[in-house]
Length: 70
Image 1 (cartoon, one colour):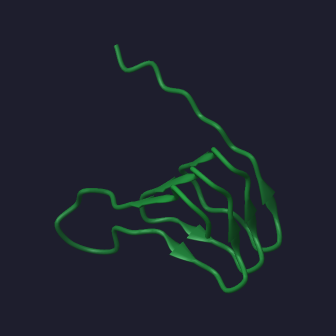
Image 2 (cartoon, helix red, strand yellow; image 1 turned 180 degrees about the vertical axis):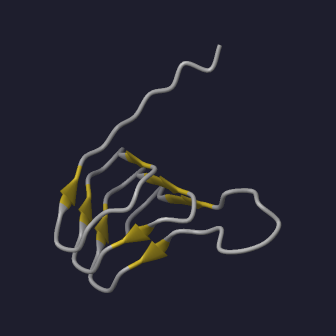
């Protein structure tokens, strides 16, 4: 994990809320990983990615999601 990474919980009061990071996973700068998700062993998250779903082991994830909040 490098600079500026955000690991955020779901906001629920009970149960699992935070991301779980597998052994050997690499997380790029300024990546944001939110919610009760799993980042698999040896997975790679690209810098600046917004990850909201599970990442399988040994996968390169470059997911960037936008939401219209209006």
